[in-house]
Length: 450
Ligand SMILES: [Zn+2]
Image 1: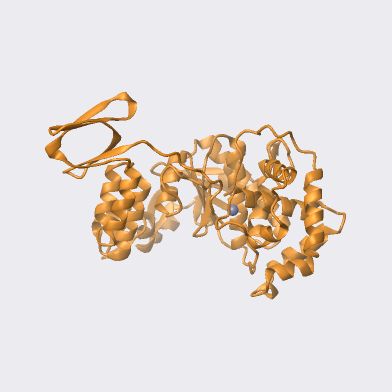
Image 2: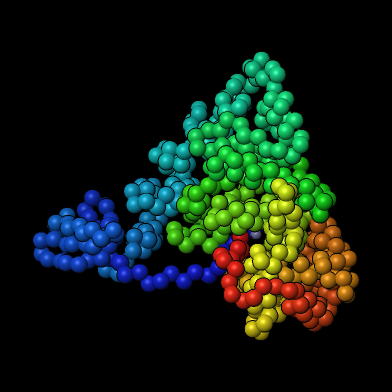
């Protein structure tokens, strides 16, 4: 649901690190060394000298991140708190979170690590957040304030409750019309609501509201396609700054600093995604993750293979906004990087064999090429009338969402429902190749996988 998009090969970094006696580490390039001092060229053209007697060691050819890896291996669970503090001190926010989590996993009573994680203590028990702690104490979030549950009926006179939030009659009416409403938030996080979504956002208000309204319109499209509806409130975190998202992803163990391969993920019932570059790309990621969330939380069995799971999300994510209305599951060649790359691979003879797409092979990770093929296969199956594929695909979708699919060989089921591998492969590739795409000259930043 989450995985790495493109393969990024880090360029070899010409760096050294000086580790001081007090634990501080400075990355740069050693330009002079003597018995009395070590001089380092640091970022921004500056130089720093350190008295030799304060230098614990000079790590040649290492970056701060290399040093982290070394420390991480040596630290173990016992040293996780200290490692977390080292990470904080050296600007690795996400890695610090990861270490503090490891520390509380090892020792659930480690107050220092809980505090760094923003956990809240009440009657000897740690809660993941102040909100959870206050909820356990019988408080309700009433428009950004904690109000005792016993007092809520007095405080909420004139307000309407919808899925645990309280609205004025006007706001509730707006939501019924598909609009979004911003409620008082906490800290930097705005609380944006629609009928079906609660988004916590650090986007500017206008964009946060717009994205929430687009989510609501995507919901209608999912409902029309999948039928069954989730029975739970759908939540998401929208990171206005890519760095914040990276820190979060690193803290969740999904990336390393500077090596973010994912632009959004769905976990713990919540979607998490960043604003990137431009609105189109960002909405593409958002709709993709919302599709996963809807598909997984709508209460039906879910025995779909990765190509379907990712393919259907990419299928919906290719969108356009026309007169303020979101249209999804489109083919807009000038925007569709999945089509662009897939056609390129077909043209250069590098398209994956269908079996590789269906089984998720080759390759240990789900990379961008996998997403492109998965999108293409879903597009072909939903659109190619010749061979009757749309009807067969509908049957296949019903199958993977039915109890009958549990434990079945999914490759064999595909052949039984859709058709023989060779025939489908031939039809698939020639259908995609025949779409009028755009010339191979780059379409800006590719959307990649998420
Ligand atoms: Zn995905």
